[in-house]
Length: 175
Image (cartoon, rainbow, N blue to C red; front, side, top):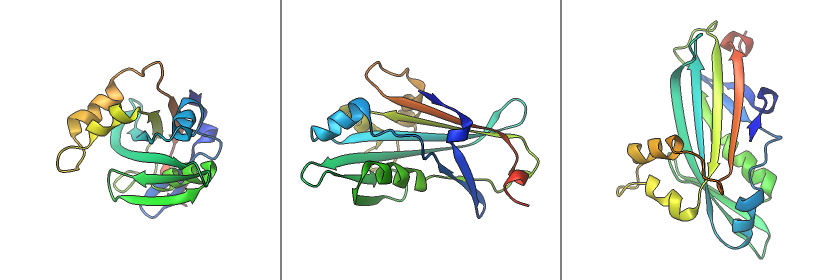
């Protein structure tokens, strides 16, 4: 599913941009069915900042969120399992989705205010058995598995969302 740039909102914060997508709902469909069946579902977020006419990647970030559902309370819990591990619980679906976006930021230090930039966000749901190998034995991210996650084609049963924003200039966000 592709979403227009109006759906990906960029907000300046310090030396970076925060992302939000209030109209995007990824706790739906097959993923929501698995959650309601008591199965935790990993969601992989890849953010790529591109620059120039050739849209050369200048920064790429990756986060994995493990989402679970409490059947008794009918609330979601989310854990950030890559960098800076954090968890929240007792959230409704919209709050759980929003929390995932609040964990994402794109550094912009070193970029010229007038550079033409694009931002791509890809979200993929994973089967729990497919999602676990990303973390290596030391519980760090395995680079080869990270590359594999986003280079392999989307499986038919896998949910995927693409959001894009751009072109834009940092000067538009900071006077």
